[in-house]
Image 1 (cartoon, one colour):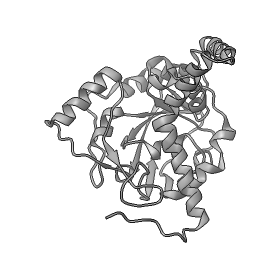
Image 2 (cartoon, helix red, strand yellow):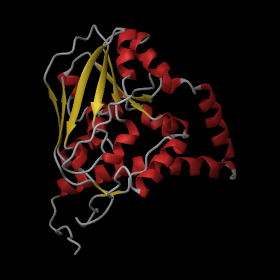
Image 3 (cartoon, one colour):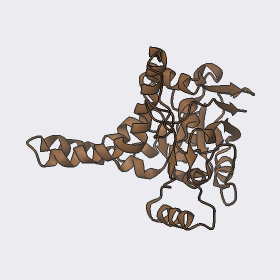
Image 4 (cartoon, helix red, strand yellow):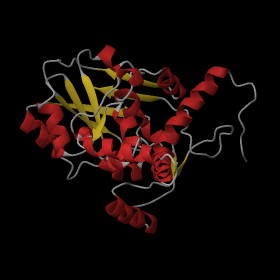
Length: 285
């Protein structure tokens, strides 16, 4: 039976829902739309726009692995605060971070869409700069997304960078001190085990970030996002199931995981791609 939202929902909650909706849309569809727009313009009288952008794209191709292009104004958008309050999400500090050092943060869990990592590290909605003054957070993301026209520029504004050694080396050795590079250790594969009430973490053969810390003299910081796995329900995909074998094979080919998940809808609570309203508490120490 479908459970619909009451008509008398306060505007504050409607704004929170809209904020999360645009974020989910950005994750699931904006990249594809950007590719479509870029291609479509090539076959119209506005083809020059795509050509000019392609030229800029070529000249700027190394930017995602050289610290990206953070825009503090975008990180401080009010829409992120509405998104924070939807769950709600919070960031808890348990130790001071010295701005004269650089850090590598091992982040768990990935969850389905990594909402806790995004809110805590890619926006100021949970007060990262207030809690850790002088520390500049960066979050690694699959290189694939930085090959998408227009979309690459948008995600770089939040402090997202490519997930490769060159990117890590630049942030930890060439951008001075006070940098925190966050790596979701389990990666996209860990998303396939994200389900309510359980935490299955991938650590085996995932120790490259420790080697990076030793090479660059960076301190290690553990970060755990409680509640991340409770945001969506995922179709059962046991390790020996046919579905899991297909998902693993697609990940090897495409580099991204494809969890079959659902949450709630916009106007009803039974089914949809919106995350459930469940608290996210991200603890960094």
